[in-house]
Image 1: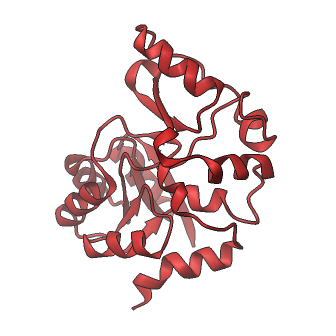
Image 2 (image 1 turned 120 degrees about the vertical axis):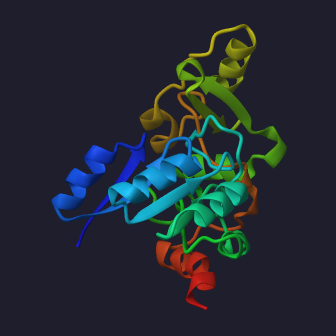
Length: 215
């Protein structure tokens, strides 16, 4: 089986081309919308990812949370919907299932896994950050937002936004997250990372987050 995960804007022609090449297409629209989900389904996408602003990484510019995005998209299409954004434990996975998700699409929880190549210092920084202390700043003139632990690029990025600069730098992910220098780049995760209590093997994480969907 060939699986292609597509992140960005919905392109019906490209989806049809990927399907013709034999791919299972998982469509993750940058700013998930009901219209976009329907368009992707009509073009042949197999799975839709409903990403809420609860997520880490490059957050949607829309303010819709994961629960609302999942409920709206699951109601709009007949293909499976995966919830993304703040799915860090079994309770959050169960909540996603209740509103219509048939699975979850997870990032932050796997950063705090034994197998993740992020530096141990990065993992400690994320787990030690109080949920109220994360910083959100806008980049790419409003098209992208980052949520990060409170270090240099987050502090300076937010200050730049307030001064009218909507495209401040986010630094280096290599030196920041992978090498463990929190002032070299953003440590970008969901603020629900505070609900993660331990660094576990990926197998353990998959079993936990998949449990609600096995019932």
